[in-house]
Length: 490
Image (cartoon, rainbow, N blue to C red; front, side, top):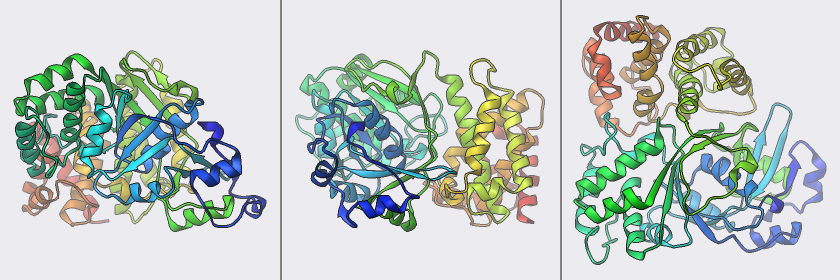
């Protein structure tokens, strides 16, 4: 599909002058202006989590890879229908603004064939059950899997408990009752898988693209657990026999789009785009698993397929995502608003370097180019033209700390070291929680209750939400308490 794209310099006034100002971005206008096909590709991919990252990553990879216009995406939003409404009004098209230190490049992406409100579970079920659909991708965020600290469906979450009851009533029923459809992503997907089983539509690959360790295996075990909780034996057997789960490591910094970004796209291209996406030039996608019903040739866009994804997952989760989480709380405590501002603070930069030093001790040195990866991360973080907000990164911190910081701290303590940098990240988060300065978190009520406890008790209860194993080491509780106290005095 990449031959249907237009690429122009946002820095050049000539591009804006050459294009009619305010031309609506839709397939008819794009075809008239570029000579490309005006019809969307047939849907062969269903996606849960239509947000900016999906459009900068999987949808972009598919656009570049699909020269024959054969792999259309039906993308479903999460909690808000806004993105689907905006993109559907543009026939699935949107502008991707790549922002480097040297300038901007704008490309029109057309791999989304259908943009759908996530509340339309009936439409999701139809697409997952369709024989033409070969795979499902997910970017629902870590918290969107609605799992407990043991990686199982969190039955303490009212939405999960309600969905399990719905699954019990419906998975063995002759017809689904979608008047009150499931609310959580994996329950909705499980309903689609059962519909596919009934349709005899053949194998399916489910590809998790969220920042979770062993995300494919975690998705598999969680969906099997949901089927067991629902006593849906036939569904569970179909999952085990006909559905493969692909693990991935994904990477592309994608900040929230601002009105200024919308104006920049219009000035550069003449397109009236309601929903452009801003991202960095860097992109990375590593995948491991089977695609029995086929897949796009994502390797054309640079994707890599490996047998063992674990080292790549940990490198990205700890070095990129872990340092992002550290910056989100420690940087904000020092008054910074963006990643570039925070990493430009010598004190905060030294904290990042110290955390990386702890993390790389527990990564294999062969094949990961850890020195080069860290140097590239600093270059990316220093790109002040990418306004990556710390408040955005800090959302849903409880779940993120569980997979980005806690494993490094446990490994350091097991090796007989104090894990000072990992402790610092947790301390900054605790300080923000106790002072009610945290961004939104889906465990909000439990977080607020834990943070309201007096003194060190608050630290204990907050750490319990992140990783109860940390409480087995009393020295960790003391160290995190001291770190939190230090951040509260900044």
